[in-house]
Length: 200
Length: 393
Image: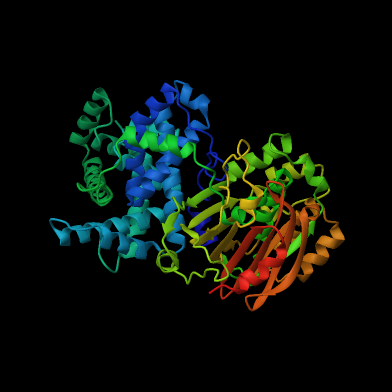
């Protein structure tokens, strides 16, 4: 992705504090943190898998999401919207990862490799077609404005409008409009990228 | 009732409106053909997108770790040794407090030292590779004020934390039984030291990537805190995205080496053991992408001045550097000395360090050949470095 496209797509993601670049300290063993981890891990890893299509990477990034939470004990200990914060952070990390992959133009090769590694399937043809569609969807998400990609992936992950509003920091009444805009942007981008191969 | 907004219709489709509002919407739809038509269109679009996004859901054969197991792994991760970047690993064995600041500068200067090929008209990112390494001595007296924990140190730490986004995680290093297996994993021709009779422990580190979005105000704030308000960063810095991609690297460890990152203060390694410790790191060049608007030579000049160089010396040095292909590594002047030398058929840089680690002197020999960067590190006399490196096969 070139600079212009990056700017058009909303600039750098991830306003949250960074990760991994500094030494890790022992993870929290407090019951509160553990409870949050156990409660939200499936949702966080699910969001990341949808974005990246790779279980190993999704689980690794999920650790980084919780590591960010660990570094903000005030958030973990508060009664605030921790679940929303985790989902939003996971989506930001996932989209960053997705866009970086797309920028290096390795996405297709990697997707192809995942397909090869996906192993036996009861219906290999259906599996290949599904993987190809998923690859296209991820490529489109990587090109969307982050705000659009975020709301689409979180809604697809099962978040209600209330949860979306809490996660993204918007008013509940605006979620429908934002979804409509994000869907229109998705459709437009999909057509631009794949109109020769199919009509959405 | 006026016609309904798309957002309201969309929420109604998802069943995300209150019961009373839902009934009001239904009453309106019963009498408004235009809204009904829009509702049908929205419904069809939403269904198409939902179907597309549903392909991303984990398949029935895809299972994730159970949360308790994932939590146990998370805790174990927290107790691991820190994972250093390639640049960090280059100097990891010798990092001292003052080196921490120099290490940051190394990364910054390294990032800035890959200028695009002056094709300023092109709105594309420049992807450049290391072809040679240049070392520049810096006077670290001014950097003594930069320590972990003090205000400047915290600002730098926070800046890195806030502005660097890891885009690709290397994961756990893979152990290779021999050079052939390392070749296979790493994807390039791995070479080992024939001059050593013992078998090395070989590990392959996965690809890594990170992005750094520069924030002029905060960088300038660090310089101000550092007492260098005289150095003014250009406005082109603000918002510039620097992306670094580090390919797979191979580390071969010979002899008894203490584990990097492990606290050896209770049981310090014996000097007789360390003297046989040699590490060989090899990796294809990292690539660094910078926007063409960024005046990297100007930034590198400022970074070197911040590191203690005079403006004149920094400018003179920067003028001599081929900014399209040179990795510049700043070395604290009081940490040791360096010289250029012939190694492995090319020109390399031999750095001799007075205190490498555990109070022992050591050396680091760096060179680039056929697109692969090599770093040979060891304890004791630097005289053994070149013959050892020349035994690579």
